[in-house]
Image (cartoon, rainbow, N blue to C red; front, side, top):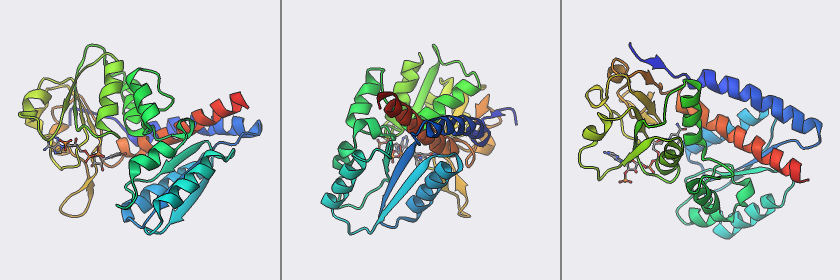
Amino acid sequence: MTATLIDGNALSKQLRADVATRAAALTARGHRPGLAVVLVGDNPASEVYVRNKVKACEDNGLYSSLDRYPATLSEAGLLKRIDELNNDPKIHGILVQLPLPKHIDSHKVIEAIAPEKDVDGFHVANAGALMTGQPLFRPCTPYGVMKMFEAHKIALTGANAVVIGRSNIVGKPMAMLLLEAGATVTVCHSKTRDLAAHTREADVVVAAVGKRNILTADMVKPGATVIDVGMNRDDNGKLCGDVDFAGVKEVAGHITPVPGGVGPMTITMLLVNTIEAAERAAANA
Ligand code: NAP
């Protein structure tokens, strides 16, 4: 292996220690940070994510509440609960686990969250503020990736960066953050004509697609930094990313594994965003 591994578990541990210190300081001043997690339905993957988020809060001194609703919950019922959480002073961050059942309009639900409690950073006010460079919250996954670059001193100014994927929750905000950091950014997607032609020129590649082996060794410039956001299952049911890790690690300069890469960072940045929300609320109290 030639690439240096970017270890999301190790970096998360460091960042969570800082979260725990800040949570303790806020709690001592009577402002215990609180995250509300809302789960509708019984999607097994969502159950795991939600459990991990609640546990991460408990482990680091944050208060958390978990609302579980059956898939039959009405949109009005969910909006009513969000309104209550918006007005609950114990709660500084609200996370509605996606996807929601089909009869509920997730845009409407996200827009109902108070922007100052939108720790996922998906509200249009925060997405717009990200575009103009002054967001209250950065979406957790791309924010975590930026922390990985920072920790490994990956030079972004002037770098060619390729983001594969253009979703609102990963690809687009990732591209914005890289742009803000001074990279020259190309966003590729399912309609891109020649993906490899783009990735071969890239100093940094972020793969956020949800398809195994979308990035193989022949598509990577020697020494490039490769970040794998994807979460897929291989033929044996084992968790794997979008990147052909075995091949790409022989070419790349830095690489993230799956599991143990971006995944733990996403939850860590949710904690960081919740702490920031609580610190802002305490400053205004
Ligand atoms: P998404 O909304 O499904 O978006 C996937 C993107 O990939 C789309 O923009 C799509 O293009 C593009 N795409 C599909 N096929 C492609 C191809 N053959 N070549 C190039 N681009 C292609 O997914 P998402 O929510 O962004 O998530 C992406 C992956 O990251 C998933 O595996 C998800 O589970 C994972 N994820 C991980 C974390 C974490 O914490 N590790 C967090 C969030 C998501 P079009 O727009 O043209 O359809």
